[in-house]
Image 1 (spheres, rainbow, N blue to C red):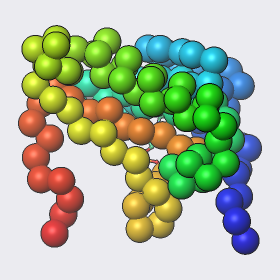
Image 2 (cartoon, helix red, strand yellow):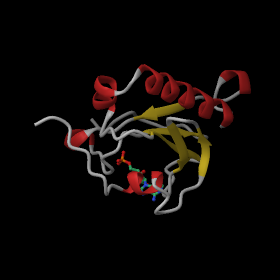
Image 3 (cartoon, rainbow, N blue to C red):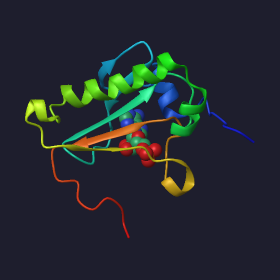
Length: 125
Ligand code: AMP
C-alpha cells in the first residue's frame, strides 16, 4: 500500500499558508512553529516542507539535502530556544508520534520539541 499523504492535513494547510501559524524558524526545506496547544513552556513543532507522513517515509524518500536541512533545523531551534548546554539549558524531549500505535493526530512528519519543565515519565506503562 505504501505511504499515503493527505494533502488536506492541517500542517499541509499551514505550509500553503491557508491557515496561520506562529513561525519560529524557516529554511528552504523545513518549518518550525509553535504548537497551538502547548504541553510545556516550550512546545515547538518542526516539520519538513516535503509531503512525508512520518519519519520512516522521510528517511526512505527524502533527498540528502532535505534530511540535512531538517536535522540542522532541529538543532538550530533547540539552540534558539536555549535548551542546549551552551545556553545553560536544562534539556528537552524530542518526540515524533507515528501511526495508530504512536497516536499520531496530524499525518505530516513532525517533531515535538518540549522543554522548560521536567517532562516526567517517558510513556505510560
Ligand atoms: P501529534 O499527536 O503528534 O500528531 O501532534 C499534533 C500536534 O499538532 C498537537 O500537539 C496539536 O496541538 C498540534 N496542532 C494541531 N493543529 C495545530 C495548528 N493549527 N497549529 C499549531 N499546532 C497545531
